[in-house]
Length: 367
Image (cartoon, rainbow, N blue to C red; front, side, top):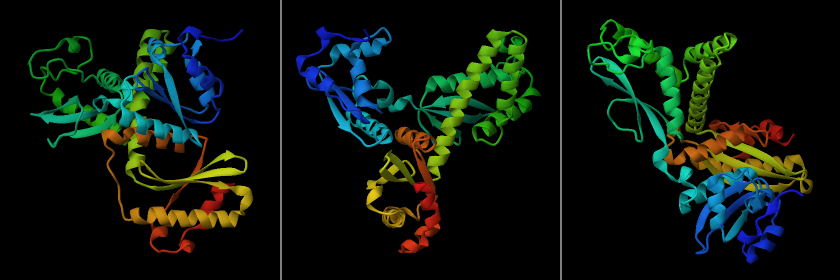
């Protein structure tokens, strides 16, 4: 018979709204009996997503069950694309700060990895902010738990997880073969600093040796039927891969490129987006059947000049904690199969004339 609606929990006013839900992308705002927004979500198909809240299913988490018990009404904001729904959801969560969107609304959840030189050796810790203290910072990363897991795994693998670096006697981790002996052996400090440098090089994306060796260790453990150890290496690798992904997001965004992209909404309709860094500068829909490719390319060129021109002299930017959500949404979108994009070179924006822009790259967007 399929899913059943929990009729006793649905206010009468919502029954028709649920029945008439559209199948388009968009954002939904769940409200309580005081008309307060308690949750903001996005969906590629609003009908399927919003209806799921009003169905009895064992798959619902405790958070969703608690949310359902407080829903008295909802509001929809339709968008043309799922990408716009993601960006709008992010914006509204930061503005409204709904009680059930705790993960995204708390900026202190973003974490930096800090390398700080103390006396003769480097130390590693986590920080919620960047201080002008001569330290080297990596991040920001959205998940403190993931960062902790990745760092702990790398420390143990490199055997630099020392419990008492300044004590002068062997620590417990030395006896467990997780520390090379910097706690009591002065000669080990040089080796410790070299291994820590490898970790810094890895986080900067210039050395992947640690990653490759971890993968081999996982394979070796699995081949030896030591599945518990293999699983531990796998979890560490997953955490490290997450950090690598965040580094790529930040590097791409901070390059502050001029991005022109299109997404086909329907066979005869496309939408153009112009993106700079982590900002969407412009978007517009075009009906393809009403104009030929040449006319469409000229319109795109005009908008490129208009909206990128004032930013053409801007060099790289710095992504702050408050901007990483938008940066990640844009990066994921650009690397999905939903759109096609090209990078507009700054030199094409030096003159106020459309002919300076290479038309051939724009025609590739329309193919």
